[in-house]
Length: 419
Image 1 (cartoon, rainbow, N blue to C red):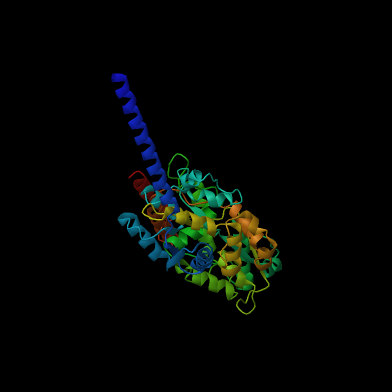
Image 2: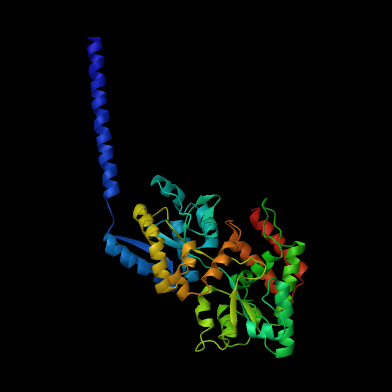
């Protein structure tokens, strides 16, 4: 009797296990098959949002799922992301990030681990993606985003003026300084233009010079290094370049720098790729035909990639990843590059004949991307940037010596990093 009772109990248990397994399988199948009618993407306004809209239209045509692209300006986007990171309302399924924001949002637990999501699908990161663009999509080795726009700093110089005064293509920042001085003194044209507005602009403009001198903000062990001899030398050169820049350059932002170049008033500058199409257009640029685009001297351009990520609060994570992978497919990246001007993050597209026929400087941009450097991947970057901006600007306007400015910057950055 006892044996029969045990057998019956085992049979009942087995039946229960089977029923539960079937129920769970049905549940997960239903989950996998359930597709939302719509997902919402929060994006940077302008060209980047336009690229997503092109992809969204095709995604809807192929899947029946509508993609609503909400677009905001730079500061408004950051503020909206910061609010959502705190409130986690689930209002957005995909979010666009400027790459230095990644560490801060990832450290707050706001972003899904996309690397894990890919693994669960049996996928790996396509090796066609440019390495530097993938690296800025990581925080502490975890892939929290995928790279959407391959933005990177470039450099332009006036070949007519450089040739006239015996200068060849600059390979160091000392070359740029020497040419700037000569052209300004002999020609009366400003030899360089600094984007010196306090805040993100002056830091962004200074970093390629800073890195080219071998300087670091934070070393591998977390030590703050902004007052090193290399850093001081870089800031001194930056201040020297200001002598040959237009008046008021300490307040210039992108619009003023671009205008100076296009009006033919300066001989050289750091630029962004979005400006390049019009630089040699005679109807838009007085310098047309005399401008060469190269990677910044010293091979230390700053990458400024834009990324796509999935908030942990999204209610449609699988579809969100489907859309991101759709946007970043080779065919779609090519389409939005050609139609909207969004620079790709796939290496093969920078040598694609159709793409290069429209954007002749893309091989140069690829070289810059491959040699680019990223801002420190620390959650406190926005605070560090504000501190650097303040003291670099103080030195630029002569209110402090380079040594004093960077010494004070180090003290304040250490206080932030050490908490």
